[in-house]
Structures are given as structure tokens and as C-alpha cells.
Amino acid sequence: MTLHETALKSVHETLGARLVPFAGWNMPVQYRGILEEVQLVRTRAGLFDLGHMGRVAVRGPDAVAFLQRVQTNDVTTIKPGQIRYAMFLNEQGLTQDDILVYHEPAGDGWFLVINAGNCERDLGILRAAAASFRVTVDDQTRQLAMIAIQGPRSQAVTQRVTEIDLAGLKYYSWARGRIAGVNGALSRTGYTGEDGFEFYVPQSEAVRLWNLLLEQGRAEGLLPAGLGSRDTLRLEAGMPLYGHEIDETTNPLEAGLGWAVKFTHDFVGRAALEQIQAKGGTGRRLVGFVTPSRRVPRQGYPLVAGGREIGKVASGTSSPTLQTNLGTGYVADAFAQPGTEIAFAIKDKLEPAKVVPLPFYKRSR
Amino acid sequence: MRPKDCKYLKSHEWCRIEGGIATLGITDYAVAHLSDLVFLDLPSQGKKVTAGESYAEIESVKAVSDIYSPVSGEIVDVNRGLPDDLDQLKNDPFGKGWMIKVKVTAESPELMTAAAYEAYVATQPE
Image (cartoon, rainbow over all chains, first blue to last red; front, top):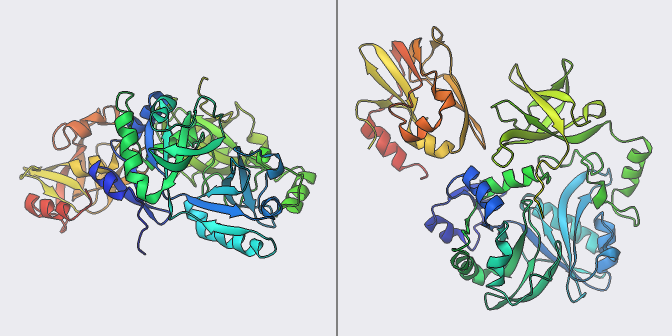
């Protein structure tokens, strides 16, 4: 299978990135080192190529009714220029993807950001559902570049490349305007737990915007960062990753994502979730845990308490910010309380761990 | 240039055999590609290792990797301080970053000379 390349591939090679296949794309996993890039984003700012993320425009007279059907959040409460987190579910209430829903600042359409690994399936779901509505579903993934700047210095750097007033742009809001001299969009969003922005510009402008940001951010210490650090950053910030915390075997309620599900409209999967709620849940839930062990918990390792398996690790990392190894996993309800002593198993050896509240890391504002 | 007095495996381990005793380690290429090392588990003295089989585990932020033995025999010495000072692997992979010493009974048929290993690494991703 040939890998898709983003518009920034040659830039990454020049910068010495290590490129690896990710969800069908050849993506930079790191430039200098994952731990160093995590610290960069927590203390200054990092620049990420997110060209692999799926981006889909939804327009038409039935766009609201269509979105109310296919995703879990209530789009009638999303004002123009606002963004909400939401999920695509199947009829069993299991998670097909987690997404961001952007309401066009002019109020005349919608824009969805979806996961690279689910892009084809999501488009299939959207196009099949669109047949019953007066909407167009336009995959813009290949036309648009997506770049993120993340970290406390993001606003200072970004304001130098755009006339959009960033001080007036709230978290989970977006605007269209001139960015690096061309028409584009930026949102105050991210997947790191830090302040930051995500840019959408035509593919042809990607290299120019990337280089301009690096140049304008040099004094602030801005450097490129790879998807390896992004994974540790999102995990420290307690954000789920499709294929780890959430997938087709999990529902948003047990994942602690019930806040992204609004029972105000008839979305796919609603009846199943209501049945699960009526039964008092699935008997398990997603928790975070920290470990004093030097071993890093990895996806699939058994979680153990009282001599029996109580679940499996979903994600794990060595956290440079919290200076501990940590992870997430689904455990039986009885073991979900913060403070509960559990363990994770590597082969036959048990490593001690303790359930803690999510997120592990919250930035001071 | 990697040391000429060592032999190498494609899985990026090295060994230096002197007077029937092999010193084992992993190459600078392995260290660079594992990156961000967080954990190393070395076996104890007296245990036996087998050429081509894993004798230790090393963890980076992203993955757990096996370390394969280029030789068979009994472990006669272990670099006990190394797991607590993983920077030695970055700073001196062919010297202070050694892992174990083995009294050799057999060598892996896959072992390469330094020149052959250099040529092999040249074909691998940077």
C-alpha cells in the first residue's frame, strides 16, 4: 500500500524528522526526541503537521437535521464560530469515531474534523446518511493543509501571522480570515492540553505558513514536534485516542464522554445508550492510573486486582510532565474509585499502580 | 565508524570476543532509533543465553524491544549500573554501555563484520 504524503513531507525531511506510517500516511513521529518535544509544548510552543486528519465540509438546507442524526452532540446549541466535541456511534451505541464539529463563523455551513484512521469509514457513514437529506458532504482532506501550534507561546507567535484578533477568540472557537497573507481558517483547539491553534489553509500554502510560523516563533523557542509527543501530551491531558480509549467495542458513557452526548435529538445509537443507562451502565469504566514502576504500561496488558484480571490497559506512557509512568484502561466499576490499588501485568510480573482522577495534567490558566 | 573489533547482528546488537569471553551490547543505531529510553532489564550472572534469542528487554517511551544475543554461553558478568544510567547507552554504546559478558560456547552464524554491518545500516532508514 502506498502511503499518502502531506504537503510538508520535504520540509520534515529537511528538518531531520523520523517519518513513520500512521493511518495510511507517512508522518513525522519525532524530530529531536519525544520527551524533549513534550517539554517544548508544555513550556514554549511546538508546531505539528496534522495533514493526515480528515476534514469534511457539510452544507445544505438540511445540514442541521443531518448532523443531529449522525452525531451525538446537539448542534442547535452550537453558535456560528463555535466548535464542539462529538461522536459518531453505530446502532449499538458503540463508537465509530470522535470528531470536532465546527459551525461556520458566517452560520452558513459546518466543518467536521475526523480521525485519519476512520476517514474512509466516516465518509461512507456520512454519504449513506446524506441520501435522505438535502446536504452535500465534501471531503476536503486533500485540498486543505492542517497545521497546529500548541503551547503557552502560541498566541504571541500566531498573532504575528494573522490579522484575526486572537485575544478575542475563545477556546473551542474559530474564525476565517487572512493567515500568512492568504484566506484560511484557524481554531483555538488542540490535542495537547495547552493553549494553541489549528490552521486550515490551501495545500499550496502549507510550506509557506509552516516556515513563516517557525521564523516568527524563533524568539519564543518554537520548534517542530512530532506525533510521538502529541500522543504523550494528549494522554497526560486525559484526551482519548481512537483505537485506544475508544473504539467499536466501547460506548461514550463508560469512556467518561457522556458530556459529548446530548439526549435532545434522535442520533444513531441513542436507543442503545438509553438502554445501557437504564441498566446502570456496562459494569466497567475508563480510569487513569499512575505507577511507581519503571515499566511503561502498554495497550493490552492485563489490569489486575485481588488476584484476578479486572480489565486491560488502553494507553500508557512515560510522562515527562508528571515525572511518572501512567496509563488508562477499562476496569470493573468496583475498582474505578481514585485511590484504588491495582496492578498491570507484564508477562507474569505484576507492577503496582493506583487509580487517579482524569486528566492527569491540567494547565494553570 | 563502528568498532572494527566487534561483530554485529542485523537486529543491531554487537559483541566483542576476547579470550573466549564475549562482551555484548547494542549499537548506536539501535540507541538512536529506540530514543527516549526509560527502562532496561538485564539478566543475572550465571544464567545461560542462546545465540539468536532474547536475553534482555529495553523500553523507550513508545515501545518495548527485545535484545538478542549474538552468542551462546553462560553470563559471567553484568553491567549492573547500566539500568540506572541509561545515558551511558547514548554516550558510549560500544564502551560503558556494555550489557553482559558471556563465556562463549557458540556464535550466531548471522554475525557480520563491521564493514558488512556498515553496509547493512546504509540500507536502513536514517
